[in-house]
Length: 590
Image (cartoon, rainbow, N blue to C red; front, side, top):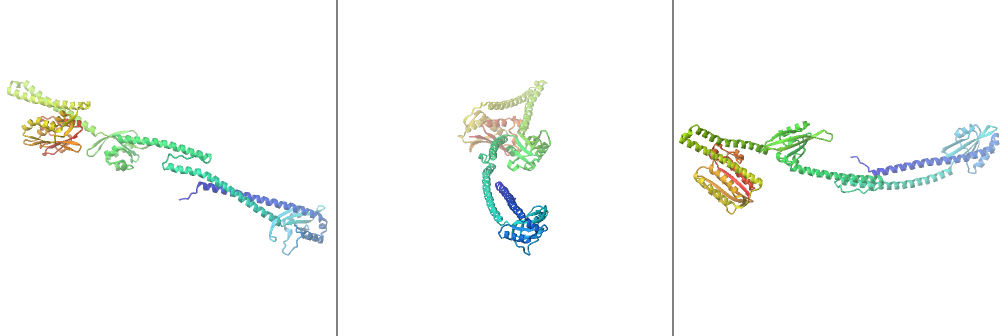
């Protein structure tokens, strides 16, 4: 991982570097200019001295009086001033204030002398290894009647000036250090002044990232940083408001999806589940935590649903189909699918809404069966009555025996037709009174109701040699509509008597179990096949139609009983087996 330096450290280092370079260049060029100025001053002094000596010694130089010139140079050299050298135009030394040695180099090739030999003033600065210091040389030509008769060269070893320079260097270096130190302190203060508000903003952004959107940055520092802090506060406030709106909308959406009876599934364009509500989980035996991010075929193993999702993703317009989910029981789903688009308008997934229409399908089937059964049940006795009446009309009425027999059969079918109509009216009346809320309920004894039903059906039972046995606690009470409750019990006991063989028992029992009163009607009749038990409470449904018709049943008794028990906030169940008899159990809240 690359190690990154802080912004303040970079800011400080950059300022320090710029200040240091600025001071170094400033000092360097200032010292160079100062040194040039000093050497220029020395050069002018030496020029004046050389001109003066040239004027004084002009006659002697023209005469090449080497002795005089040498003695005179020796006298000047003994005073410790600048070095004085007098030469002929061709470079021969006539006199020198410093004694010449064997190691003294040939001076005739010096640049200042070459300039003087050409008639101009020559100036040169060079380091003398012999003297171990810089030396300023000035050579002035001496003329007589326009002819160069000699050269006077003066030089100064600048020992005194070097000491001045060294002192100036030290003072200047100290001054530069002091200024640099002051500049560094100022830079450090400025960097620290920038660091504090930046650190405050950094700490604030970390708190924002952790979810603390109530925190506010205190504007400080420069105008730009204060504006940045204010903008950050405004941005976080706006973000908080947006998050609150999004959270509210999400909660509303979750509540809406959770309360929907329809199953809702959202998938992306790769058929991975993005969202699903609780109804979907109940239908497909899963939940969103398990299914989230999985392919829909992996999460919900239903090939029809997977194919429907594929068709929805490929269709630009909404589609609708019926799907079947195999289970216990099977479900029929009305599926609606439509594409979901991203902000650019490109398909990003699909929304699947599944409506469980199994109950509607079942109700529709029951309605069809009901219409068919009603038509059949009404048509059969009407057809029989019409047939016998036509037979009588055609002459059978003249035969007393045949006429009586036909009339008895017609009366029997008329009674059956009356029974069907009365049962239908009774069922309709129960439903209407329930819808109007006209039912009156009051505390009543369950035992008394059972005894009343048993006495009412006792004659019918004795005719078939059947014993009605009652076992109950007469202290049990429930809120009941006594006539309707007895009607429901009467229908159950009547069926038990009809389908029980001679010399058998029908047991009616009642007991308390937790918060319910449980009433059971048991018989030892022929029983009901298990595959037909779920439908026995449907209107006009009969297990053995031929046998039921012989017993006078229309297939409405159990349906009426179920409606009455439902009105009492209870439920009725049945269990049976072929040849094992049947048990009808009523659960009513105590």
